[in-house]
Image (cartoon, rainbow, N blue to C red; front, side):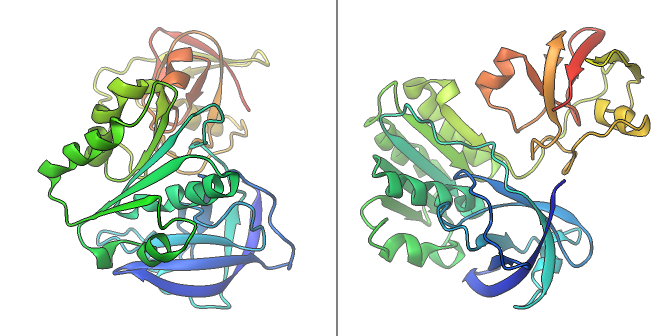
Length: 318
């Protein structure tokens, strides 16, 4: 991981239990340009590494804005970042992207559930800059739990594009989504982030209209895979090195134990840092970072969680 030392320039309370952290480089230099929808690795005061979406406009390279929701069952990540103050230093990784805007789309629909607004806010900034057609639907239990609600409701750039749905019961959400889907074509693209059940509802409504491959999903929490039927496999690198992967270990773990340098971060199939090329064999995808189209292509896989349909894979490390 490329390590960038940053300083907390500003701390804001964006909603109940949600802190905004504005980060600037400690060396005073601007950040490199990144794509809307990107996320970064953040190492907090306790040394715990977590991933957070960048919320700020991509054209503003002077700072990166992230939002951290305090999780009741935090293992030290969000709780630690809720203790930092302006002037504190942190370490982050360079922004990387799994949720990209489709250049060919005739219309974009962004659908956020709760803290899932974070990657979509950056995308809304970028779509406004491009003067492209989009609308953003924001679902939250209560307005005071909706991060960046003031920005989205009152800033001129977003005022006519944002559809807030605060306090809408779960049973009534599909009707609102269907109304949005009725305005789309097969050339439209949909982007969603939020709880897994919420994103499943979004996909169920929009996929029949725009196609499954044009509903883009960003996961924050890994889904536990059933490993009971796992079998050993053999992995060959494009360098010719061959490794046996037992049923109880991931490909990533075996490579790391054998001194192979593989970029990794979450190790849960969410962040995409260990995604590598597949040269031969069929991957058994278990990640939540590759899109449906990328999985169908079968030429990439996340080494931390995915395995093989057969007994052998040949891969290329990126």
